[in-house]
Length: 309
Ligand SMILES: Nc1ncnc2c1ncn2[C@@H]1O[C@H](COP(=O)(O)OP(=O)(O)OP(=O)(O)O)[C@@H](O)[C@H]1O
Image (cartoon, rainbow, N blue to C red; front, side, top):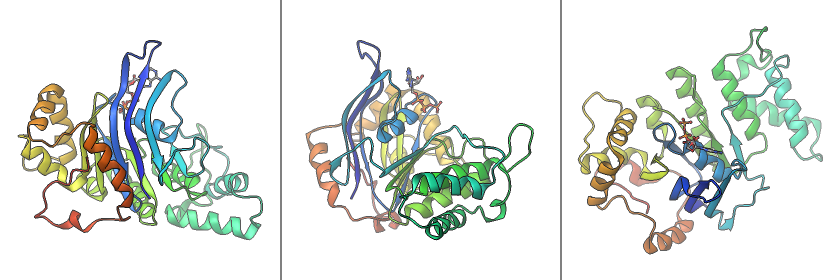
């Protein structure tokens, strides 16, 4: 019941020499929310659009993406992608926008009452009750807040109940409290048995703590992939302890930015950065049997880093 991406390589150019992603491997489980982090330009959006099957026409993709044991189908309704762009009709209210989209996208055999129920549930799930009847707004009409717009974008995608929800920086431009609220809402969606993966830039401590899993990228390569709460130990073991009072996510990015070759070498010495290998392939094929949901090991402080490949 997992989503797997194996040896994912994305290149541009006729000669396919420039690699935007270089053999990235990982998996995501239902019931868990994963953060994709890394410096600007490291390939976060590229990874998410590849997983969603919506990458630009000028890039070439190689590798294997599977959902529930089957190769990802580009036209599958199981995967939804929420990009950074928000395109709304400013003169419609939040509820009108959701109702319009629900009528267009939900099965035509559904009755008006059933569609209204889906819209109401989505409004509650995304905490949009207070602004349900407010106009979204545009350049000359003051409307809902940026945080509410982000939650509306997510609401539009969860109308169809996708199994996998991919989001590109759902908290960009939000203050820390609004960002926390958005990620909390996404975590609640994951808890309903969905896979949620989102890129995020330097979340605050409280927001970071919501994430179950973390994928850290640098220059299109994996630096860390595992449980989010084990990343600090991972970096400390590799010789990059997080100073007291520094935000962990700041620390990861600062360490990566030091010198990728240096950190890569240090991490490899610790036998924790393991590149795609024969063993990985075997391990990857066995993750399909993992149970869904948050694992008890995440709460056991005596456990070492759980490295999934
Ligand atoms: N279609 C494309 N054509 C050419 N170059 C591209 C294309 N898509 C991405 N890139 C380049 O690939 C690299 C990774 O881009 P990507 O948008 O995935 O990074 P990111 O980690 O999401 O960055 P940011 O945090 O700044 O949004 C960048 O150098 C970008 O310029």
